[in-house]
Length: 113
Figure 1: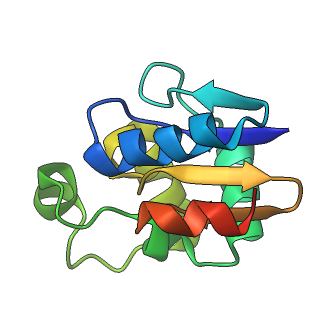
Figure 2: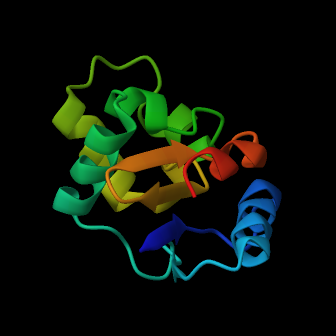
């Protein structure tokens, strides 16, 4: 099953959702701001993406700049920051089987569906 971790207020996320809708393949939408991810779910996504937690952070968010920027944080501390502040999670993330991509640009989503 294809899963999109989606923020409806984000243009790129809406474009990613449109790509999935146009694919005519079944998928599940997870609005992660309304239904926050668990630590385990976020760690699984990071592992499948094959990136560091730092690479999944939206560093231009005010929350990051005010509370975390410039600090020497461990991976677990960065994950906890994203769990506590889901707006910090880059979006959209599309997961399919054992593959995932951050949909920036949204067209990259087509490579895994």
